[in-house]
Image (cartoon, rainbow, N blue to C red; front, side):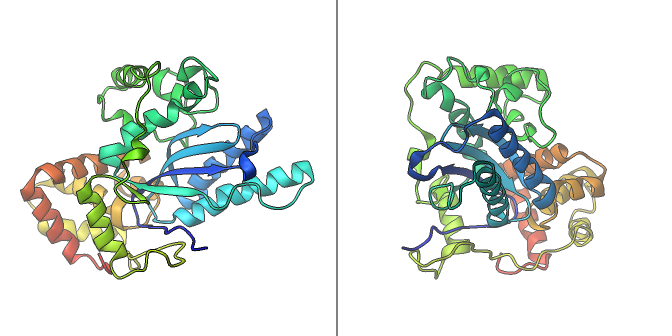
Length: 315
């Protein structure tokens, strides 16, 4: 049987799920859940994963994650592989723990990240485990809606920034956003897939297919598809942006952060260190430019001009 197609590139967002074999429980104890979360943390430290949302159910989990380095396969091999090794050793068993490979849906973050976060956070409510999503300890919801100290590896700012620039106000608005559907039946955003591995607008799906899937056989075994092989360094990106945006330092800085995030393949921490800002500031600046680029044709042309000057392959 052919394996699922993987589309990987720097800055890609995914909704990832993985279920236990025969739908059996993969989290049986407090220690199991804590151990799995520790592997999410190590995935951020070792491979630059940006974990935005998570929810651990008994026999499966959900993640909304971003890959600044375009390395989803490596990240997931670490998470599922390390956890399976731990689980098997603890219970003196062998073999597969999860049902096949993980399922990853490429997501148009600007269109669907907010909605997917709500869908993921409401999983325990839909399963009648809790009445409100904050009651469930094994999801990231309470770090979004309550003033709880979040794990350092959890990236909340990207989604909260859709609601307000002030953290407290954003958390209140997000809580209201999630709670509007607590007692409601609603259509899963995943039912809107225009393509089996892509969740986004028709324009987004067409762009991805043209950029990554043109000429490929959809039923071939392609565990990872990486069209971006040559990645410019941070200094190169900064120099090219400066050559085009000489008169607007503020815009130039935002565009640098956006392009470094999208094309350099560097970890958020490395980019932040280069610019003297936090990892969340890199993500927020990148998102702001993505939104502006969609609505400002002049800016779109400027960014396209810059990208054409970068040493990229097949972009």
